[in-house]
Image 1 (cartoon, rainbow, N blue to C red):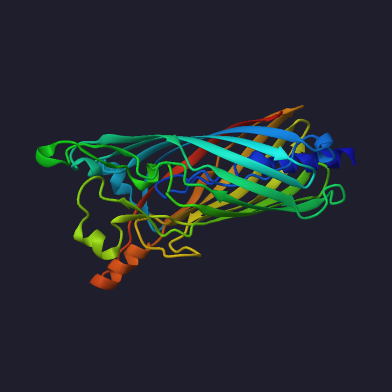
Image 2: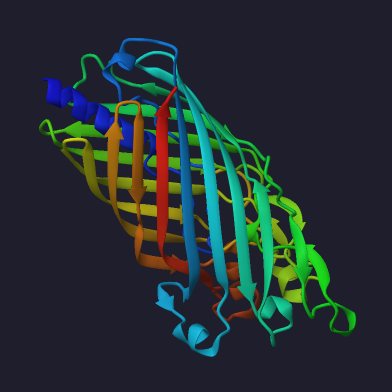
Length: 366
């Protein structure tokens, strides 16, 4: 029973901090607004109230491979016309454990992005735009549906929260060789490196696990963020005048999209180490559940293999997870479909994706 109990806690801490943040690897701008499953790694916290957990999670990726649908546009790299995004996110999360069923968390992300391209800077020279600052803060409440003191082999946790529009969604930088006479022009940076999306999102989440033995079990997470706002009013023309095509298909203004994530996998515990292997899908859909879906967005999804390892010492844990992209698909957006209808020619935009993302984090019991 002692080992089973510890493994239950291992699964819980895995769901709590190991990369449930949603932040896809590329121009498909899924931001780090994912939920946290709130359960501590210490047995005494299951019966006591008033515990606090602090987590710091660092995530980095470099997107540079362009896809239209599932087809990689390899000529973009060969010709040097590809877009390269370097994205770093530092999430700080504070979780209040009220008792062994209820908890509340607040997540504050700090983002630092660099975007390198030719087409945004006159098409002849590669230049960079940047963004840095606080992203969209999220607050969430969680409850285990079964009593953890009795449900030792498996449990499901439900979460509900809000993603707040605290990050700048009109962050501006200079675009070179785009103004009058080739001068630089100040304008909103690309949607993929904006610090926020300008909308209040409704976060829904389910986390679950099942233990087959004291050191082996399965886990799963489903996360969906509903964004009722359709557009945020920010021009996608980078300080210039939107093209007639962008105006006609509605992509001249940035969209505020939904996003979702699904994770499933297995854990194996050995001493103070917990090894995991799973599959992760992150998606920015073309259409939202609530409200309109027009405006500029790069919808698509990434399916990744997700190995990870966690090491725990008393009130301290450290982990690393590296989702490795297996399938990347830039699907048709609503403006793409409008263009197809207006012109009679099938239209589908592209997006740049990363090969992998690196996640490293630490957790403290306060």
